[in-house]
Length: 291
Figure 1 (spheres, rainbow, N blue to C red):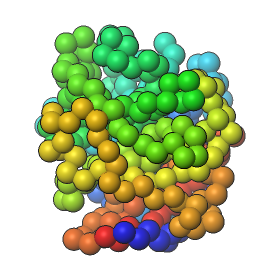
Figure 2 (cartoon, rainbow, N blue to C red):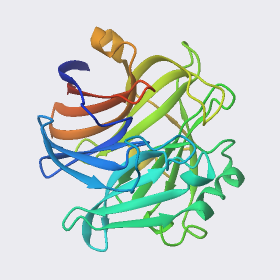
Figure 3 (cartoon, rainbow, N blue to C red):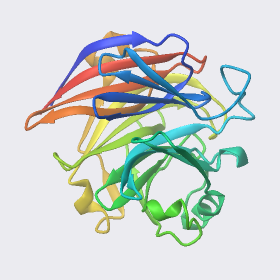
Figure 4 (cartoon, rainbow, N blue to C red):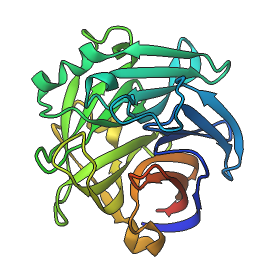
């Protein structure tokens, strides 16, 4: 497996990139403290800006932000929607939003009751960083840290938005190497074409889900046959883990936050990656993954 960096860009005036999705030749970019969604074409030229929150500051302060970290595309009420989920690491972060991709209607949901179930299921510290629609499942990724190093995949479905206290919930530990210290999942996406769960992960010197720490290395990982493993295995292992700084020196010093698929063929995928550096800047990478 080979990864090649195709393009790189620092975004102007869009803060703290944390999630992104590609739909109908457009890239939807979310920031964890941004009050808007940035919409670009596949070459990263701005096409639209969609307001999520009314706020006087360009960056919503840390104590007030919804900490939107997880994104995925879902079929909701028989229409395509962008699902955006808060991390759950603080009370103000127990929210989710859906954006209709046909008429741009935004709906807000309180999912505190769902997050309150996670400690009882085995999550020591809630910090949802990724989401992916895997056929009929919705998979959420909970990021580990130095104090609670385990990373987990939570399997539910979209009913968690309207029935957070009764939506199905399964928990799987995802095994990651710790050669360079605890590694935390930062984003996931699913390729139904390849039957692969792709994820981004990074090392960060932080002891909890709230504080930022010194950024280490970032990686791109792959779990093969992910759909078939759900319900059959209690511990899911990555089949591939690519050190991005070994691919290109441009990745050094960046905390990769998420991955989205632009296009795919039998033996390759074109991917977008988003990164921040904990100072409010956002960076985009485009890569070609060859099998």
